[in-house]
Length: 386
Image (cartoon, rainbow, N blue to C red; front, side, top):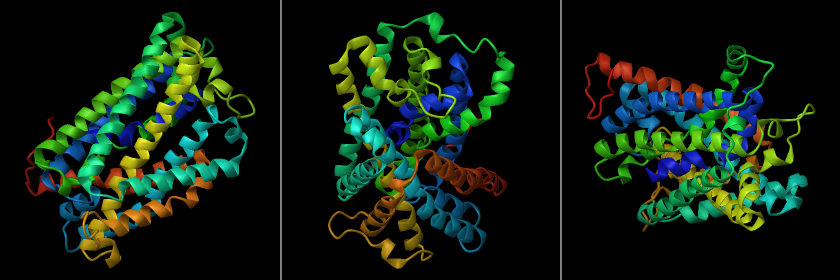
């Protein structure tokens, strides 16, 4: 569950709140976070059922291979998925690295105006992530649990700070020029794309099923509990931010630039309530949280080309395990290093590219995979209700 939580939270909600508010003004933005949680729970049921039936390294790779036949269509679809992950996983990682470097501008203002320096800092975080993951899963698990604790505590601290100066009237205000139906009709779709990016990661544990005890029981629980926990935190965070900072101060200006408060939402909220030094401490915790997400993502994604290589449909060196740590060393290093060049791209372009790719190649095929298994009367240990 810790692996899922750190992969989901990261820095995403703290840098995308202004983007959601740009599509859904004021309290209407809560609809995007709630709808995102509902969609994530529905998709999480798919992950839970398939994860309980086919626990192993690779997650979706294994699901697609087994559901559609390991020798023909399933093998081809899984092969295509493995290649797509090698292209999209570095973008997922880079989004976290870029977000880290962007938010570090609160402590180091020179970063805000230096694209090259920002890219170098992002790449440095990528190298550190790879170094910490290059070790046995038992040690990685210990680090993951610690990072999950920091991630949850960070959001809880921002929510607690917001409660100290919370204005219910301000939090529940919306754009007086637009009705609720018009606002949702115009902006819910694009806002939902952003919140789904923030929820992404609840299936991370399913990619390391070979390294989990009692996976048929543990994986489904980890998926559903992580979505519920993070969903509550996200809604509370959005509501708390709106109760302290007027939503008009967080939306992009007419020229597309963001106000200062929108760049560092969590730090601005804490500074307004508790002062400068607590805000700096929370900023450091935000950066640790951002790092935690990249840690979980790289851990999960490295197992996919490894599983494909073990099956003989990817480069053979990717199947190599570390001599003593018994983790997929080549796959881990390759995915980690491929993310570094993407650290010099814009965050918006990276998010758009990776969200589209992951939806088409990972999320959409998994759903008919469940239908295919039902048609063959294959019963999973964890079967979704209704």
